[in-house]
Length: 359
Image 1 (spheres, rainbow, N blue to C red):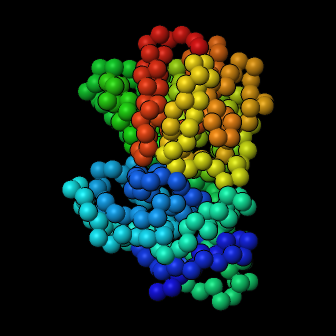
Image 2 (cartoon, one colour):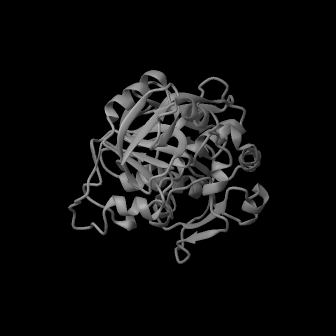
Image 3 (cartoon, helix red, strand yellow):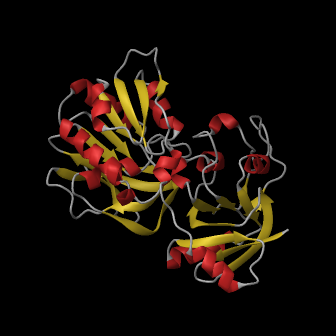
């Protein structure tokens, strides 16, 4: 069946319907990862979005469900140039299309993804419509214009506490789930930590009452400025001085909680190949990223020092808050997918909890 991607600027791209095809409006973004499509699809930060994959063939090594980063597929649409129907890999359990169908995710294959990505890079992230009928442009435009996103963090956060590493003897860490990936908790668990994953609406009082040695603020979807209640509680946790490590959305929430600002980027950073420079020692690493908003360098509190910058566009990638046991990064040190070059930051966090001091 023919299917179409219609962008809000009126451009139309034709392909073939795949997965659990249905008409759906979404925010259209692109990801430049060459591998790791299942980890991308199960990353809660993609909730409400339609992902265009730049790599030309997707699904070639099939699916191994142990690679999932959450309990379900998170985007509302998946857009590829070629969807492989005959995967080959010793870990393969099932073809990707079967998983898309099982989780109700519509897909379009055969799309000229190079053209779509070029348009998004030139014009910026746009809303779009996945449909099998683009004969009425006014109807399509109306559906795209009506698309809104709300309550994304709450929709992907756990509804009750979850525990990792209960038999470990290391530090106790509270992980505030704003859309966390499994590998954040697992990265701590592997280092001997006892991890309690809290729902995003948990109060600072309840987290502090748990007597934890440290706090992690997770990644997640949407506009950080919409998370007003969470930001209020993050400020209380900041004031309490608990050792804290924040990733992606958590990095943005901490900046907002301390008086900083965030803005929407033209087309964001999404992929496993983004270079980041650590300014203190003039070293650079390749990182995994997935965000459409960024922390502004201007407006951060006086005790905040920018510790990392993006090599390509010089945007803020990390902040250290002097006088507090606290540091944040925009990228994903837990990878999944992506390089593990910056996994040492979890060790730095554990050292910070052990010292109980300030940066």
